[in-house]
Image (cartoon, rainbow, N blue to C red; front, side, top):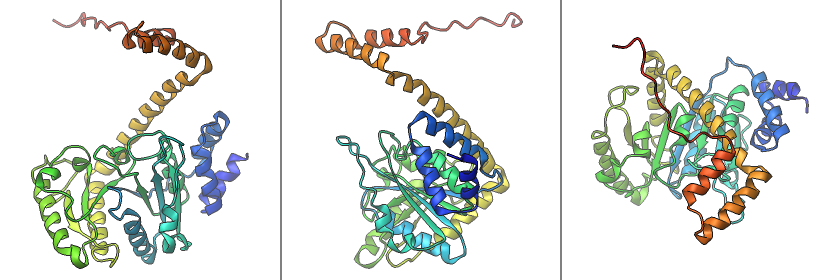
Length: 337
């Protein structure tokens, strides 16, 4: 593969090249990983999109919201990329990848790009290579990148490590103030959007929004937030009410963070986070070699019969991999009193 040509075509905004690039970065083959790194390093460094992560429980209307929100952004002259992470089966490993089918209008707009990807075995609500897919979309010149998580619980917060804004979508009657102050995804959200605020559900949406607005005031204020953020507000993806107000608030929050220096600092922290994650992933991949798998099977059989303690068996494997488990002794500073 000519990685330089692929990177050039991605930078020129070719949708087919971008799709091929994302397929390349999602591959686990060693040669593909090298090619993916070459493509990423060849992309323009001066392009910066607004990365928006979005999570919520199944059925809250994430895909409907993204389509309505994306269509509004396209109408304002912006190019929008959508990276939707679909849950993978724990039994078969397969994924439906039906988000593009749900976003029928947005998928036909030339200014929009939609890519569903499987979560595989990666936890945290996003795929293992979603961050690299974001970098490809940014290099392709998109203005806004929407990252839709699997969205299954309060621990799906990894997307906050690759997004500039983290939106949490809630359904009417989704909980009270106590639910709102729970740690995890609630304290990571920059904005809480109560969706389906239309028709018979509007009164329930109003109560839910008020409950969560009150709960947010009880959370510890974050230094990267101006007064009034994070905030809760009502939107309707069906009638498209409140989308323009939500977008205006997002722009105001991002502008404040840029001016205060938090935007660049957050991206730097995210880059370091993913560096550390890549190191951990590389170390864990050593467990997949045939020799280690054979040794683990042998020790696993002894563990299952009770002949060997699990912790001791794990220590054997780590020792054979060259991992030093002895406690570290910190020598005192000779210059200290």
